[in-house]
Image 1: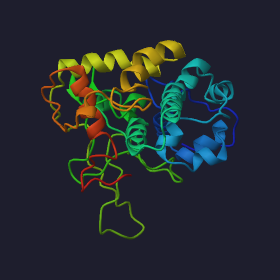
Image 2: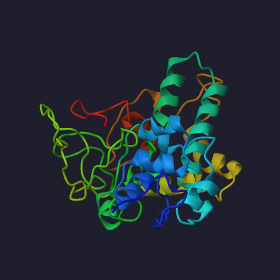
Image 3: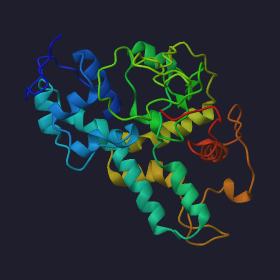
Image 4: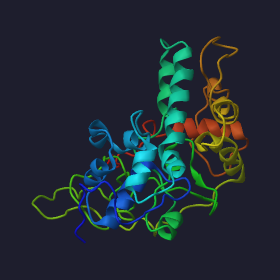
Length: 298
């Protein structure tokens, strides 16, 4: 297909799916048009600096993004659906940053806690969802505490079974590369030359364990933060309020989790005893705190 990326309007409409991430939609749309993600981003009017950032930053969008213009150029896609691609993740990141900033930023624990709650640089995924949607990546999969798929009630995958690499760390691609929506995009170690040396392991055939009911219930309560129809006050009450607290019996004025305040450590998620223990396990195993030595961000 010979697509003129300089055209103000594409001839093919590609609607976002519910809960999709902004970077995921751009990648999927670009694959449909047989062009690179950066070419599509320029044609849709994305700010030049956003085109050069890592995937997590693209997923959070930019203050200069114009949902109306993007929707018009994307063959008349619903502007509200386009705005929802980045709105929820951007709001979550902003509220977490504000909450941490109001605490005692000089304390090391606060810095660590704020870091593990921010959207991850890579993305987890549900193999079944990825297969059924033909490679549509969801915004919720970048939340550090979002560990299970509520649809299939299974734990999310976090690394390629073949190479151990995490997914969707890199930003929008400069060149068009086919068939990477459902396969591992990490380059194979030790390979060089002009050929495509990506791992390309199928990410949809990974077997994952069943998710605990308590974890699914906690996620269902907190995921409202990504819903554009939920007010900021409601989002703070349901999501940020469950993750952070501004007063602690031991350290007044600092952000803490009641479960981690005891000093206990646990990464077991198979049979949590309470939602608070789940939250402790989430913060302990979040991206950047318990990364596998073989996992590579890409």
